[in-house]
Amino acid sequence: MQLVAEQKQKEEGQSRQKSRYDAKILLVDDDLFCCTFIEGVLRSHGYGAVTVVNDGEAAIEATKKICPDIVLIDIVMPKVDGLEYCRWVRGIPEFERLPVIVQTAITRADYIKHAFDAGATDFIRKPVDVNELLSRTSIHIENQMLMRDLIQYQQRIHSELDKACETQRLIMPSEEVQQAITKKYNIDIAAHFQPSSELGGDFWGVENIDDDKMVLFNVDFSGHGVTAALNTFRLHTILKEANLQDKTAGEILMMLNSKICALLEVGAFATMFLAIIDRTSPVLLYASAGAPAALIISPDGNSNILDNAGIPLGVVEDAEYTDCRAAFHPDDVLITYSDALIETEDKSGMFLSEEAVCSCVTDTLHAMQYNKGENRHAVIVLDQLRKLLRVHKGEMPVEDDLTIAVFHRRP
Amino acid sequence: MDYIENISGDSARVALKGKFTFNDHDKFRGVIDMVKENGLRMLALDFDGVEFIDSAGLGMLLVAREEGKKHGTDVVLCNAKGQAEKMFRVSKFETLFNMQ
Image (cartoon, rainbow over all chains, first blue to last red; front, side, top):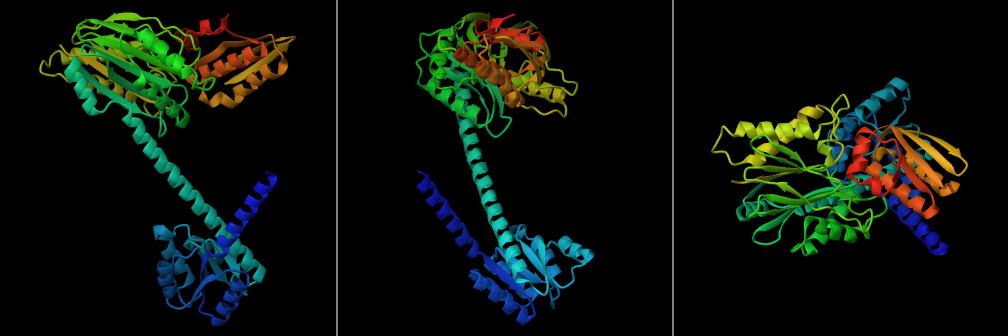
């Protein structure tokens, strides 16, 4: 094993060395003797790709043409001098990080500062000392290559996270699915999903059970970011494959819990609210695995904070979940949300209470009573809740994933 | 979050203080190591000074519980109040831990 590792290390070393000596070097000096000397030193030490030009204008053209990995440039030259070249190169986004080493016979601090201000990366003294030339050239090429690798790595991670984020949004119901639910079960839906980083540990959803019954749920995995997001995909897969028919809400949670338990590491869990709506019944059947309390608000001002006690999913394999019932009449609104809504601090460290959330919804529904033609209750309630959180938190950040789903039972 | 530990014989009491959140993973690792290394019969986590616990904090307690099961240590949660007490109640932690 060790031999293989050593061999690999050696090969990596060689490939890095090889690529370092492959670096494209642009050498700019109007002093032909100096050019020949530096080029000779570089070539004799293994640098094979050296391009030589003799003034600043030619340097600009060569830079555009060959995209060098490093530039060694004299300061004092006719037409465009070394400092002007530096200023030009820093104005081109593509060459923002290109190492430019200026050669100068004047090493006074103020003069060198002038060169750094113009955009030089480093300087070497004239007359050129071979060791100084080689060590500075080598270190800046190495830095440049590491920086390039790092930027490429960041870009790759960023683009992969973007794709993962898109995929995560796809596990939540699309507009079309929401509209189909509205049509079939007379339930109007509006939802907001905002992960705290690119990916989140929350998701919500709806599933058909039969012509009369549908399931809705809101899930929040502990933690956030990539690990929590992977768990949302796991649970989503389990849900999609599950047979939800002839099960109570508590039984569905028990089934999900027993399956997710085997997949989660110790300390990871999910809170979940799950409810079954029957279009022929004014009763909502639900169960909770420690999710934030769902709310049912009636247009007459009544609000019901639903019982939410339950062991989170993924903690103990044989956990049981109590089936509960709540009145859910036409024009009532059901709100489920992740804990970020009630656990985001305002500037004095206070949280929004469930009562404050209820009262915001009650006021919204009350105001809507005077607008009989309005049937976008879910969207309007959601907008008001987002506004409530925005006003509450002020400048404070929302540090956890936030999901709010609003379901309005149409009359 | 900060904590003060007090070991006497085969029991330990750890008084936690402040907010117990996602950012306390590394610190709480020290408490979990106490379970692993000291052969304790009981570890009491005192929440009297804890004003807030989030889901990551609950997760860390579940890790402590699991380590306790492995090493024969009874992890006890004491004196939770306010938001922490509510979180324990909502998550039915009384069915998972001894509470005092």
